[in-house]
Length: 443
Image 1 (cartoon, rainbow, N blue to C red):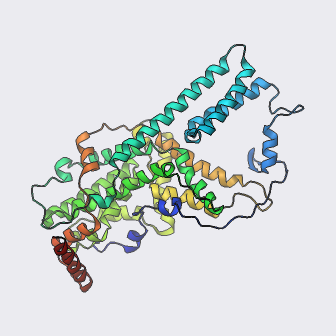
Image 2: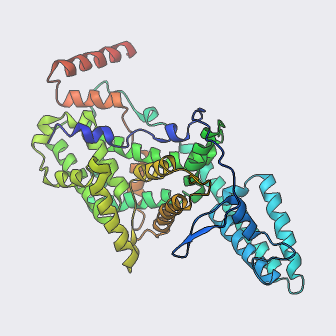
Image 3: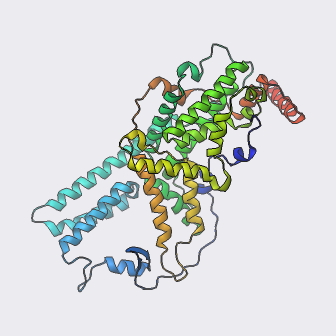
């Protein structure tokens, strides 16, 4: 058990994946322009399947002889509904002056259709006010997060001596696995609530910009994704730090079993992201190599957890568990049963590869609506899950420790690991010798 499956550790989403998906480098091939042929939209079972862009626009734009709706006011009401959903779902689309100006111009034209009672004007005024409030709230959230934004390596400390036995650890703050799992879920839901559809769509739009040899330099548009990804890595490193820095083997064994129980409670709650982060932390090499410690651990529960997160067949076991949690959420009567927090890196990769593998247009040049329906469905599921209110009360003491406790760098983890259990083979002995030399040079 202590050797830990390397295959799983290598496939764990440990390092940020957004640098490759959303980086600033320009690459990719220019896709041939199929052109827009004026072909009537195709419907299947009442759903739009494909159609040329020209034909779709033609059905939306009124002319002297044709209105999408029989009455102009009714048509204006639908435009208002469209703008309302657009501004609520994708407020970042209106953060620059040009788009906001265009929105106001459209709104002004629509209000002219209802000059008699002013109802439309009131609705548009409220819509604009809500939009400005949403943009302001997101800007403030980013400013607050930026103050605490630090790379994991900056928090790491190189150990020159073994830690004090009186040093505070997670067990001194919370020794109940269920309570810690609930606090982790609270943090997860808080972070998920600040991820919006346009954040997820940046993955799609960035890939399109690369295909057209354009660079997307606006880092702020992917900040929420990167911040959440960084939380996963911090939690993994915190788990490894808490285990490796314990001096006595008996206490270290207890720490490992504690985190196994926390991961199990996260699974029961539906918090798969924290569960995966904890498992990733215990599968890091500095923890996995502690053979004497793992030999004392009751690993039956851990085996079950690793089975659920087995990466084979594209994480088939995890996806089955996620589907079960989603079905439970749909029929649940309480927020406690509605919680579904997917492994975020895997969720992002699903959207990424769905967009990468399937073309935007069909061979006949029409828009591939099936692809975009599927992307929309996945994002809609995520939006449904993120709207769940956390049923657990916030424990400031526990959350403060989880968010601010010192995290060792990878180098520091290996040093702590070797100090707890010495190197056993030539490779480990060479690594330990190199690390000690590094410490002496820094002293």
